[in-house]
Amino acid sequence: MVKKLVSVVISLGIFGSIGLLVYSNVQKGIMKKKEKEEHQLKLSKIDRRMMVATDTVKRENLSFSINSTGTIASETQMTVFSMIPGEIRSLKVKEGDDVKKGDIIARLDAGKIALNYNQARAGLSQAKLNLQNMEVNYKRMKTLYDEKAISKSEFEKIDIGYKVAQQQVKMASASVSLVSSSWSDATLKAPMGGTVIVKNVEEGDLMSSAQAMKNSPLVVIADLDTMKVEFHVREQFIPWLHKGLTAKIKVDAWEHEFDGKVEKIGEFLDPVTRTLKTTVLIQNKPISYILDGKKIEIKRPLKIGMFARINLKLSSKGNKIAVPSDAVISRGGFTYVFTYENGLARRKIVKPGMVDNSITEIREGLKEGEQIITIGHRAVFDGQSVRLMKTSPFTHIKQKEMVKK
Image (cartoon, rainbow, N blue to C red; front, side):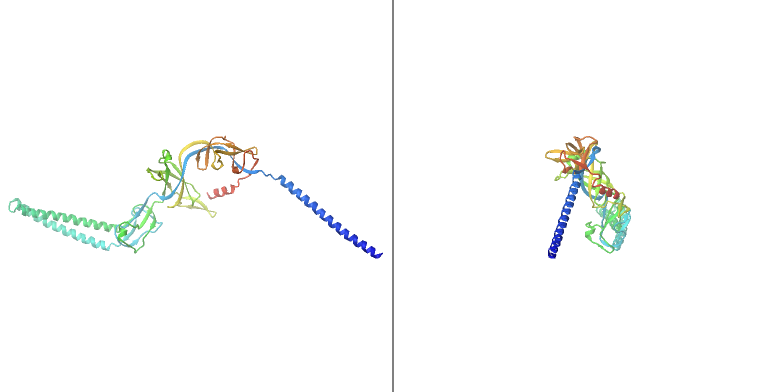
């Protein structure tokens, strides 16, 4: 009897455990199903529409312009050479020094030149004494010739000698002037005011004959207050090209736009590229710049050799309806944009006009005040349901650019 009772108790325990396990698994299944249903409900509430950003179609003051590239150079630049060989005894400048016209740059050893000068002066004195002696003799023989005391041939000899003595004085005087000029050449002076940008010699260097023939410069002086950039304009734009046109210049070093004006226009086209060389002058004025959180002033920000991007305005087109150039799509022989209308993207065929830098004129197809899609427009289709971004994803980039400027 006892054994049967124990068996019953054990059986009840086993079945009870199994029941609890089954109940626990059922409850877990119910909870998972409930969580899945809640997750599906949350997903169903997510707005899966394509996000886009828009801009208002408005009128812009457009200009007919062209873009080109060039290299920054100084407007005026002069190279100083040594006209004579010799040792550099003193050098007064270094790279980066500002000089005025006439300032002494260097002095060469003039010892040999001084000896040659003294020798030339002595030769001139001797020639003058010889001329004086010949002049006295000439006058005396002229009197005798007039009195028929000597023959004509004898007088002609004296006359020729007198003229030779005169020429010898002139030659000796020229030699003195030549040596004096060489002496002056031993002192090298700045031919213009500006900044020393290149220095190729040091004190003690010996100027060779090759350098004396202008094959190697001592220093190069440039005016860094006014810079220039030369670029080439295609033949089709020549009718609009004239002096005084304004240009915008950018370089990689600075997030700053420099103002320039057309100063020179070439008279002949390059026979290969069929382009016309044009020169723009830029005033190299100081600019303010924020670097590492500090505002600093940059003196003469433009440097010789910088790569420049030029936007040259040829003509003003007035107040025209325009949109960002990137918003205009050309595909399949059509040019169109996407507008935002009541939550839908609508494709509109447009007729573009001129392009002014990053803005395109729209002659037909859009009205002022419409909302044009500027971000996401290349991933939508006509009639697609879309939603607006609350802020542009590029806002933080634009803010950083404004801080730097």
